[in-house]
Length: 238
Image (cartoon, rainbow, N blue to C red; front, side, top):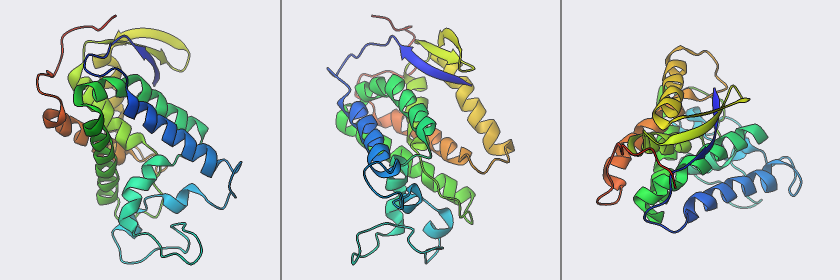
């Protein structure tokens, strides 16, 4: 496994990746304010906004208090958790891992689409990831949280846009390497596919990752700006 650190792939169409930074800030803010217990009571748990397939695909909630709302308010529909789940995380390292991938690769995908379309792209990838997870595991009562599905869409879009760009990664959490995006992201994608079919670990939503990957690969075909080519052969650089 590897951690992405940096890519030398300058922006071409936008001055700054405002949406990417805003998404990172929102994810971090939600974690700090609502999940650490520093500002709000710890009973406002991530599961309150999590996506639970068995609830999404059935008529009623499996346990009371699944969706937190102020006392006296009506509970929000289960379908809204297809959006809320992607802004909650299971822990600090879960958050940092997702945000690193989004920081390194999100800016160039945003550059290829523009700000508004990139935001739509990100949300759609996350929603489709949640649906894919729910369709594969319709009886699961395990809460699904995290931006991994939406970020997976960003990864597949980046790979289709810039496979030759060199990326600095930290292999095995300690070895710095500079390799092409095709090798780095291609290996990550193969790992998700392998685990989706072979892994027995229910604590990782592999099918959500796969759903996000598929959504990203399809959406980049028609959501990119006119004139933005797929499979750019340049290696990046200033």
